[in-house]
Length: 136
Image (cartoon, rainbow, N blue to C red; front, side, top):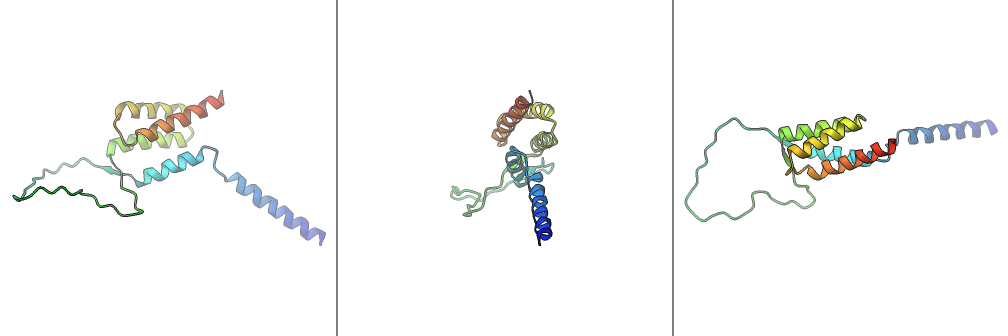
């Protein structure tokens, strides 16, 4: 009986150790949230097709083009090169290249000052700077 309890306790300790070993780092929550946001963004490609618009004479339509559905997040659309640059900086940061990622996020902020991803880039820079200062 004593031997069985020892084996069970040993197995519980091993399971607990594996759970804590796979737990993300303290800042993993930020990067996971950012990853989830990036997955919801639709990069807009530049169209090479020429289009024409025709209209019918009548009253002006003042309605909004997008409908609101309760509980549904609005889809964020970003220029394809803007998204690629941000995603590249994100991938560099999650790979652990802190200094290089800081440079890429800084470059992103200079290249796209009006981006909808600006706040995320600023938060990423703060997170990376805090991580870098902990190393020193």
